[in-house]
Image 1 (cartoon, rainbow, N blue to C red):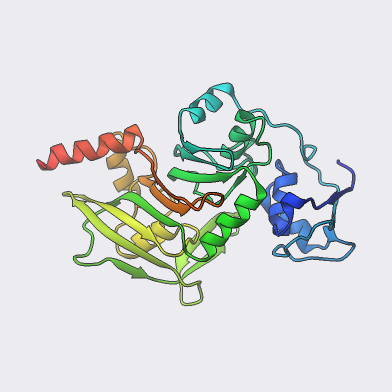
Image 2 (cartoon, rainbow, N blue to C red):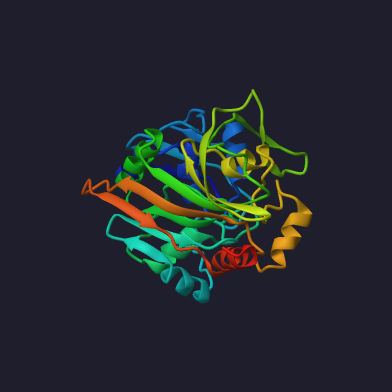
Length: 314
């Protein structure tokens, strides 16, 4: 059991949400526990209760209660083989930020039974960038381009670009079945729920948040459609649920997909989720230069497309 901690907000943390501040300082504490101690009022800002969304100011004192977890801030050292793997998957890097081609199956951060993730790998790779933070997230099973900021000022700027819909995100995905003819715009509200088991699910619901995706057919195979998807909003599981709503779930999706379909494509060598964050376009916070990133497909996804092309004679 750790002792009560009083953490002072520094210049690089100004404007950060309280929940993100705690996630950074309590890296081995599950997210659900962090939100629980905030909700119960055990976390205090300047001796008062605060909401997770509260923006912190310079000099704020955050009281962090004892948590029955591994001591917060304990150094996490991921396997060297994984660090070497990520080194080879860096698509862009400078003094301010980094873009990595994340493999499917790798969490973006530790917690909830996972001792390390992408952000811990990067912190161990770059000794001069211990404060590196995720700019956005990808599901554990989704592969592709993800941005990490090395400075809080860069993180804030990129978050503002996300809020203003100024970062272009495009995905490549393989969907089971035949995509509806001339269908591109999918504008369906999504509601996030939690099952009794604790599993997080998302469903189309009029009570959900507005959600907009554009699907562009690249190739129609006999039993699957290769699609490019442009996200306008960035909700949890957005592509996966929007695709399912059209009767074409993502291949390899064990949450929203079809077991028999997944088994069929697994036999062709695709054991992971066929969803890849292929392209990112954003303005560099320091130079204002337009940055365009293309993340290559991983071997299994690439080979699956080749097999489908051969099978269909394309």
